[in-house]
Structures are given as structure tokens and as C-alpha cells.
Image 1 (cartoon, rainbow, N blue to C red):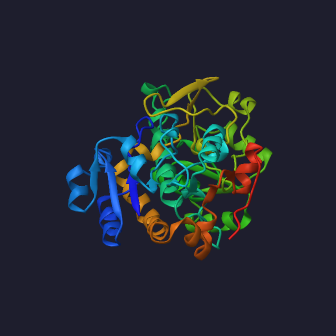
Image 2: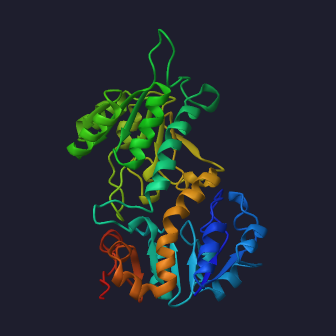
Image 3: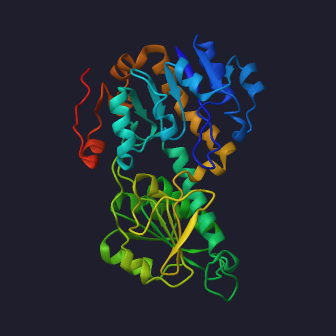
Length: 368
């Protein structure tokens, strides 16, 4: 199979869909790997690195899409790439289609075989291809929040950890999954006063155990969210329902009750966000203010730490890429149930039910 790796074009997106190690592995397995010129530069991988690994460097994105049987990316195709995709081409990347009606329509019209990293799901319910980026985004959320709480960045002038004789900052984390856990690790490490909310009591027990009383756990309901958010200096939204649009848990009215100079970081923004006042921003203009509260809502947070992110991501994506390249979509998903759940669009229809439901589109399940 010919595997194409285009350069990402989303603003400040420096990750790349395949490392030189991955290129070497796929080449060794008998496939042809073509990489758009300078696709890996943002992650510290040169054209020469790819060539040494056996890949071929292609000058234009158009040629990569034209020649490749499978496209390996990081972020969803953007409008400039819509016309480059073709029928029966495999698109293997993060898609987050519940928040992308236009892209979903294009994928159906083009009859591509779209496999989303974020919905590949193991039998225990975990999302192996989402986990490493959730770890990065969760840790970054606290780091970013601490930065914007500084007075010179528009915040209220609070040091999250406080100092002797002074109260530390208050951090509320909505969602105790991978994002929330990693945000809490950073916040606890800084010495902040941390509250994590989740709807799973089993998850709250686990968090109580690993943090050993260093953060407060609360069952997630409207009252507990309101009480916690209102008093917080930093709120991190880390809610995820696999493949679906995130539920709105923090209202505009509640944001208006927070003190001026507080910060909210909505990591769920790529799935629509769990904070009502959230709208996608970019790394070039990452924040905006509503009622004096600073909002940071960048959908591709890990894109600015690409050296870490690219290697963490490709550690988990390569296994499935290898299966797809060796067997094709149909045989690969027939033999691997987690990969089957990654199939979002096939034969011109949405075949992942939560996406079809959220977008009001026809759901046509793939039949093995």
C-alpha cells in the first residue's frame, strides 16, 4: 500500500502523522511511504530523517493525496484539503466529526473510508489513541491556566500554589478521565487547592486513592458544579462522551458569577465544549474574555508541544496503521473489534451512530 503523510495546515499545528521510526517500520513491512516536504520539521524530524528511514519526500500536498491509498494525519482535513480526497481513499486521523458537519458531508460525498483515532475503543471502554493526547492536553491545561492567572496576562494575579501564610489558588476540574486526572496531577504538584467532579463514583474512588486526600472529589451534579465553579480561580473542562458532542455543564450565567480575572480552559472544545461560552480559538489568538473571565479554548493544544506529542501519538497509532496497510479497511476491521469502532464514514454514509445522531444524518452501520 502507498501511505501518504501530508503536512498539517491547521494554525500552529506542528505535529505530524508518522515519525521516521514509523516510516521505517511500514517500509520494512513492504509498503511505500510518501511524506510531504517539511511535514516533520515542526516535530524536529527532517526530510533527510524520513529518507534514511526509506520514505520518499514529495513536494506538494496535492501529489501526496493523489498517490496515496491511505492518508495518515493528526488533525481533521481542512477545507483546502476537501478536494484532494478521493473515493475509497483511507483517511486515518483525528476527526471529531460530531463538531464538524461540513467535513462529515464531504467525507460522505467523496466516499472515503474515514477512520477516527478518537473512537477506536478497547473492550474495557478505553480509547488508546486518544489517551496520550488527553494526557498532554490535561497537563497543558493547568500550565496554561497558571500562565493566564498572572496579572500581566490579564488574570487576577494569583500564584496557583500560593506561599507560606497565603491561600493557594482554587482549581475546579470537570471530568475525572485522562484529561482531568492529568490536569489534577499538575495542579496538585503546584500546590493548588483542587476539586475534581465526575459522574462515576468508581472513578471518584480511584481518584481519592491515587491523590491520597490531596484533592477533593465531588459527584458531578448541577449544584456541585455551580458551587465549585463560582469560587474557582481556574476551571478546566475535561468532559468526554466517546464520539459525541460534549454536554454543556457550565452556563453563561455561571461564568458571569466568577470573579474577574479568573480563567477557564475547555479541553472539550474539539467536541463542541462543555462550557456554554466556549468557542474554538487558535494558538495565534488563544484567549478571549467574557464577563471578565479569560477563556482559553484551543482545539489542538498539543500542537505547540509537538516533539512530545508526535512521538506519544504515533506510539499508539502505528499498530492500527500497520493493520490497515496490510489488510485494507474491510479485512482489518473484521479481525479487530477496536478498529471497527474507529470507522466513522464508509461508502458514502456515516457508520458511527453517535456522530449520525448528533449531526442529524442517516446512520448506516457497516456490515461485515
